[in-house]
Length: 262
Image 1: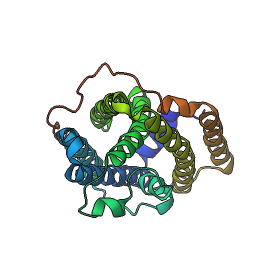
Image 2: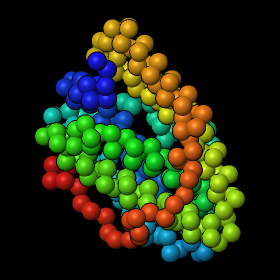
Image 3: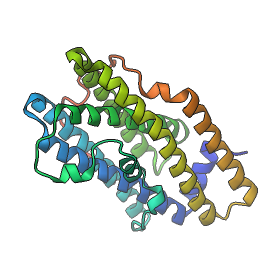
Image 4: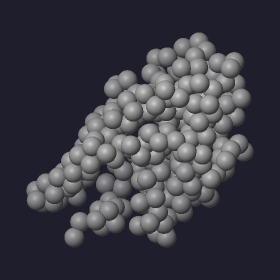
């Protein structure tokens, strides 16, 4: 029977599949770390109080990248090439979602509108990350090899999501509510399409590595398209709602260190 647990177990049990999975994850987290580091350096004067939190966000993402690299090293594996079609962060950028890397490479202060774009983009993508880590924690939180890493990353992603809610609500109270909702909607609708495409690409590569029969690959593709259909119709709405989180000031302290194996 196909399930998230059985699929991930297949990936964990095969060195080549595990290497690709960790390489994709490490690359995405490292990109997120760089982006947050640049945003922290370019914050406008009106948003300078965000600097420690954005810096902490970036430090967490860098840490996650190191964790995935460490999981590979623990098996004697080295990172592999990340196929372009599996690069979630870069594909979102190509759709005009978030802040363009060209803008972040320039030494010009960002605008308040840029900060809204950054936080809205993060609110949507951190929802995806939090949901995925909750699923992995449910299935593999006690796994002797990857459980510790999954629990730590899941905790961090929940903190990131709480931070986005809190800061976007602050900006909404300052009069940016309509703008925030528009950016959130555009980002969420683009994200569900990118997530579908990346999921299909990743499962395609895993199927070739693990030599899945055609029927299994077809069923997985159909499931991905089914999830996309639901998300495109109504599921995207969970990514645009805002509520004050139980974890207040979630990124107000220093970043935690990576586990010992990292």
